[in-house]
Image 1 (spheres, rainbow, N blue to C red):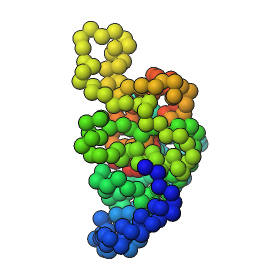
Image 2 (image 1 turned 90 degrees about the vertical axis):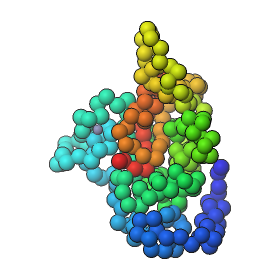
Image 3 (image 1 turned 45 degrees about the vertical axis):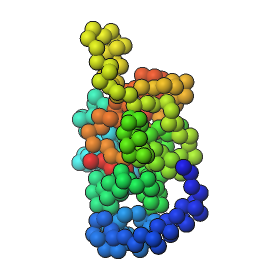
Image 4 (image 1 turned 90 degrees about the horizontal axis):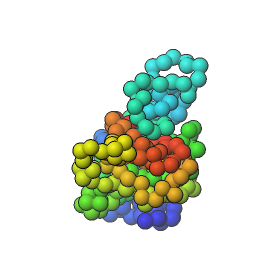
Length: 246
Ligand SMILES: [Zn+2]
Ligand SMILES: [Zn+2]
């Protein structure tokens, strides 16, 4: 569902009136709904990456390398086997960001403040080269149970902020257990590794720079599997953006 800016403002104000709430981090009362579940002070105390930190260029892990010659050459060496081109997050899994991720699993609403942070992260190198946004899909059963996909809400916010098309049809989550069979050929084995995901419309992603979005980057296994599937189906690059990096 797309809401105009004015409608969202109105909706935020209405929520504030009808549900006066306390900050999910410090329990003080939240006056401004635009900050979502946390108060302004807790947001100020939460680490948000600015893009100026030294990080692993590929997976976004903070690095203690001191003044490297080239930022795009910094690597953590833990992410060599992961398939995405580069992954970034708004910040670590702490404070107001962590509270926002937990809330997003319960309520299909992204606060104005979080939206601004996510869009700002997507505007930085190299994610700004993206041409198409794909949320990490939920399995159909899980989607029915929860009623919404939190990654889709993020993708919609990014689509508004970056004026990029959102694609919720190309990447599909399938049951991986059905795919295990003995004596698979090379392609079969690859499909098994790719596991839980399939590309149903390869023409839509051919040669595209995909921005794959999800709420949290934990081990990177999910986004890496999605990236592998998308690249094997013809995508040019797969960038990853999450709210938090655990
Ligand atoms: Zn607070
Ligand atoms: Zn890395």
